[in-house]
Image (cartoon, rainbow, N blue to C red; front, top):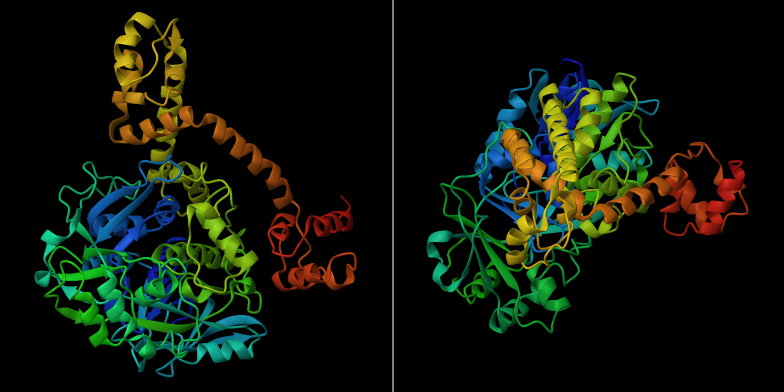
Length: 623
């Protein structure tokens, strides 16, 4: 067969972004998947984004990835979560048409000329002298390549659990993948087991929505992508909310002795922040109810996703319990929930580029690294695909710092700290979350992506226009004075104190009761300037308003990032023998030798490396 630059193994969220990024950077790419019919499949909930995850989707889009565009094109509802909190917490989320989402991904990938497909399983990675040379498939085909991005999801030695039954597979109706784990272990890799789960799907026609609380989309929906090629929704589907109760819990408990989680058959740890319903009942025994979100799976289907009811209990227990939930008395189940246990590789075995330390030109992305969630997987795929292509062209690697992106936080957490349970992104994981907002991802990242050749010139021009309009509007507001007699008629009814002297319009934005719309009523020149911003209007408003109201906080975070950034500039020798530095603590020597941090900043974030250990390293480096 043809020799490729990059082979991407797996057609999930990580695989799709990896294949697209490498191909768009000019590499010849082969995407190998066991089933061409489920490329870009939403294996669990039919939704993208949410708290911190929405910021990641925006960052993927700003870097030239496709998750935002595909989400917009397949959305059935849009909500900006956490509007009642500060802008660092605002998080976009779409409810999606599951089938349309996969169709859009397939369409995107097929539109890239140098991206090709092969339906098969991969049973081994071929290597020579510590470097990737190709892959071998289940059909016995050897395909040569220069780099491999492995995005195996939940399929490597995957086992599905429903009650006392075990079935080999990584997803309902799809077989597991075998061979790669064992081969990588022989090559020196450490592996482990994790688990995840999914809830039952039910027939929406059998539900009584009158007994549930309706969850509407936003009145003025936005979208994920900064690109003008997608548009906000004009019509939206509703989601619904209901609750479990003590009767539901008692029925579920009758099946605990047959639950693979409680009888010890599942060895892998599940996601702490998305537990199964039986896990919630066991861990939060004092709670007499838990929220259940009822989510439509698309425009043209009655299949409904029961968010909050992930379970691997016997199906008869699942059905009996779910029919005691308000609105579910006559529920008909399409398919039961199940748990899936699978292999992963602790991510401390990777570099920040997501290339493995043991084998050159082999990259891991997604759940193979111990993460959970579409968004976390997609951003890793994007970064792995970028770096695989850049390395083949002898170009500098592309990495992101913790003060540049949530993607940088996620990868640094994985590489530096590792994870023993499925890793999920939260805003609280980011030290600089006021800087890393969903509204400014394009300003932060598109210039970097454009410089490497991924983000288009059109994308870059839009970012430049947004920055220019924001700067000009800010300058206009700072130059315009407002008289008290004019201003007080507008601002006092909004609950703020009257002005006593002439004030710059920009300073009025510091008052929490006033938004930019109110201030613009007092400043016709600024209002006229904003009117020329076209479809950038709302984005410019957000930038100017947030910059004014949070200027002090933003300055402090930038200052902190600059101070800590000095440690990131201090590179550590990749071949440094830490065992010789006897002034280091034994724990520090062991962990530094295992993780091999690339900078002093990364070393400082390793659990067990103390400030005294950092001082020793500084002395060694001649500082």
